[in-house]
Image (tube, rainbow, N blue to C red; front, top):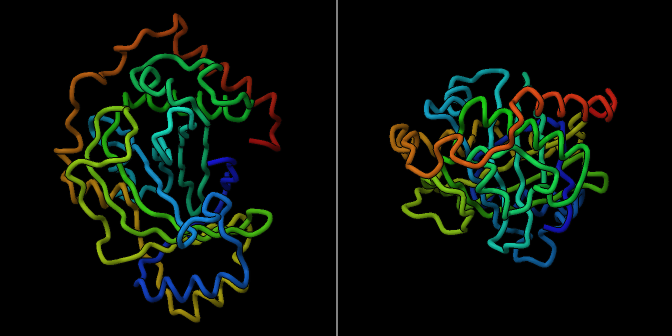
Amino acid sequence: MSTDRAQRQRREIKYLIREDEALAIRSYLSSYLEPDENALGKPDHSYSVHTLYLDSNQLATYRAANDGDRNRFKLRIRYYDEDPQSPVFFEIKRRINDGIVKQRARVKREAVHSLLAGESPMPEHLYKWSDRQWADLLDFWHLVERLQAAPRAHNAYLREAYVNADATVRVTIDRAVRIGTEFGGELGTEIMDAVEVFAGAVILELKFTERMPTWLIEMVRGFELKSSGAAKYVRGVEMLGEQRVARRRSGFEWGNAVTSTATSAPWLDASAAVRRSLGPHRQ
């Protein structure tokens, strides 16, 4: 993944569709969007996506999503291959009423294990320095510490992606969604004992930062699409079983890592200072 053009604030609408509908929509999209740069040259403009979900012993983020809380978040680590030189992405995905706010920090793969075990973040953990990504990493680490979150599940799928020139509209088509329990931080691409999520269906997701463009509204109406919840982690936990996912194996108990002498408060103060330096218009 060469660049990161993720939409930080956006609206999302999901649909479960058939494969024949997905192919027709692909043809329609070609008049308005270009393939995502990470999908260029790949068959069907698709690439593999892997996500390690973190949650508390009580599965707090799963329960918030399953209960439909209007203000909730997910903690996840996203990656795309097993290359030790490739960055991984520490992500907080927040839902605030009907909107999505996504915080994303590029992190060196070699730093993942120590951070998951409770070591305090350091600037050198970042793949490349950025004030914004440093603030996002601090926020991620604070939420993980607050929940004492640990790895729970590994989700993977094949993503077909399209975007417009200024990245204000993005459409993704996800296939072959599967999930399995994962309690470590190895970030491999194989899933042991995986179950298929939304079997027989394709997940279409419309993402836009401003108003939904007219041509996209016409697509929804023309294909008679009906929005549907398609939360991969929530559905995956339901299929795997809550007790199985909530079980924590030894090796990732919170605080086992060598930690900084700093307490949580100084790290939160540092995060706040970074945000102040960025200015209110960039929050």
